[in-house]
Image 1 (spheres, helix red, strand yellow):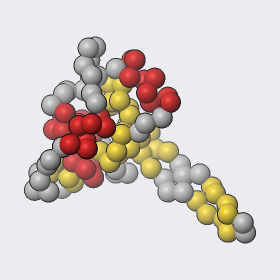
Image 2 (image 1 turned 90 degrees about the vertical axis):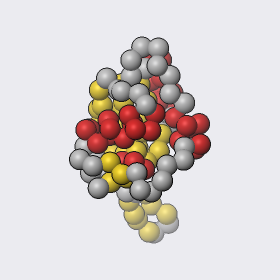
Image 3 (image 1 turned 180 degrees about the vertical axis):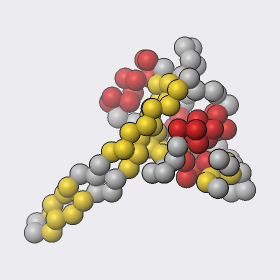
Length: 108
């Protein structure tokens, strides 16, 4: 069983993701092995909103170099959640103020 916070890790706030709010879409970083079904259930549990659809993509970590040391950032997964017209989600405000016990887990 995965907790809600293992599935929806954090909202992504970039210039592109804030423009997607005009098209009723919200962007989250999600767990690497979270399925679309789990993401949909976690979003519904946290925000009490049923999304229309969920699109996911695996993002590769960038190669970074500091002096002679070469490394790589971690790989991560991104989910774009489509909402109905007129539905607005303040993901930053709700996630920071949410109080959910560790016992609340989502089953497959």
